[in-house]
Image (tube, rainbow, N blue to C red; front, side):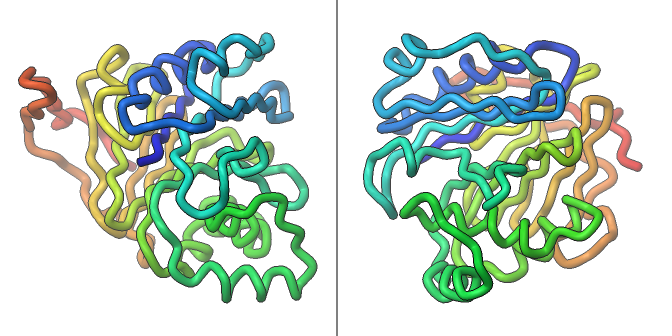
Amino acid sequence: MCGIIGYIGRREAKPILIEGLRNLEYRGCDSIRIAILDKGRVRLHKEVGDLGKFLEHLPPISGRLGIGHTRWATIGGVSKANAHPLSDCKGELFVVHNGILENFKELKKELTDRGHHFASHTDSELIAHLIEENYEDSLEKAFVRSLSKLTGSFAVAVNSKKEELLLGARRESLLVIGLGKGENFIASDIPPLLKFTNRVICLEDGEVALLEKDRVRVNYMRSSSISRSRWKPTTLVVGGCHISANVLSFHLE
């Protein structure tokens, strides 16, 4: 299983991503990569191997928005080129993905015929190129249009040079939003978030989340309407511990 962690907020993203990655290693890990937005450009670091090897070569990276991924190879071998986040042709947006895209060969051929160049052998890179193909004036709209073309399962998160936000969506694979004060988180499981927040939203199938540092909005993939404007208090049980996830006071615009 692969792992996703993302952060946007008031603090440096790197230590938060590293802590999240540490708590995703239980899923298995053959490569790791992070992508952090720093003054209008995305800084990357990737490594084949476990988190220890990743940290040995980690350079100074600053920024308050980023995503990270622990990969367990399914489609495409173990290599730096196949490590997520994966990018589009222009290197402007970055995607992490868990799951299997059943129609990626057909869509990859269509995009290749349209001039897109693929740098990895993964199915996941397809998502970045689809967003690039669909982008006009809104990353969120391009993201939703691209998801509508996919068949298969996915939990996916995206960041970009273009806009200071994180996007996430799920179909069958788990994706969780963590809520903070002046900061928000996204992850493929709850443990990576426990050090930072006890308020979470478990996205339901077919939902898309937009995260900014002071706001989270949840929509349906096929609708502009908000899917849930109010959540009941919930107690999550993780590893025998009860974690409060009361988000009644959380406001969606």
